[in-house]
Image 1: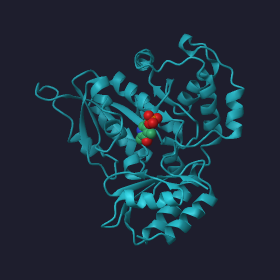
Image 2: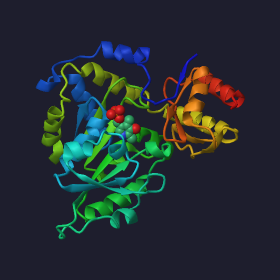
Image 3: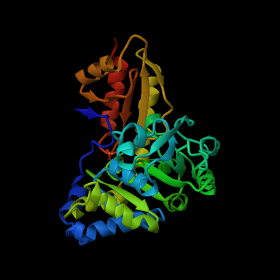
Image 4: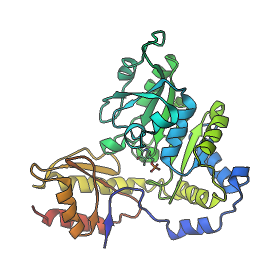
Length: 341
Ligand SMILES: *Cc1c(COP(=O)(O)O)cnc(C)c1O
């Protein structure tokens, strides 16, 4: 049995999801004629109380379009220093939006109104870039899936609005956060101008992300999707997978969290592990013991057909997901207990 914990993107469609894909009604979405895409976009917008949505091939594209529609060149985006939009999108903010970034430390990636407030530039001073957007990530991938509460988000949004800043949310794992806080998705829309949601992570769709927006950004978001090469044709087949995922795979996310917690607990007392970050959702990040490297540990994992990702010079990341079963969890716990260096 191979166990793949590199990412929650590795899942394959379930038989029922494949059924939904096979029976999707499709049309050319560049002509606005794919009924299934329209259903998906409207469903997502409604779920989070946003005005509309545009279906895209990746979460990188939805984030990049979000920042693009909220900024002008020479402006600045305020975000956590380990944000996906900054660290893992190929320099897209610089290339696509010509913006600079202001990087904040945050508390395990969660930035505070005080930190934001202290990092807003003086727009009257020509030396300083104009602060334009606060971008939050929920959950925070670089910090083992830490999450914000609605109250924290509300206070950042209120501050941002009072300073004339826009709000973007990278909600690649938005529903993982809600599985823990039990908050309602419809409570979130009012705090943001744009929100990116991934269907291809914990929700288990093979491809796809959705950018939700406030009405005034609709035409620019759709124009930018075209300009970025994200206009797709009979893509209702993929939208159908997304609809299926939203209907059937949100409730079960807490199972992934429970399995991740068990992995984290098991790792805590092993000789080859130095420390484990708190496991808040479905991501486990641990540091290997002194004298070891992630590569050495991953080679050993590989001998037992367990795959994980090196996450820094000293860290390894494991992500639980729809295709990670209890039998696989047991295997991991077995292997972790018996390997030695
Ligand atoms: C995966 C991820 C994305 C988008 O990734 P794609 O692979 O481009 O779909 C965005 N933000 C975060 C936090 C992610 O983990």
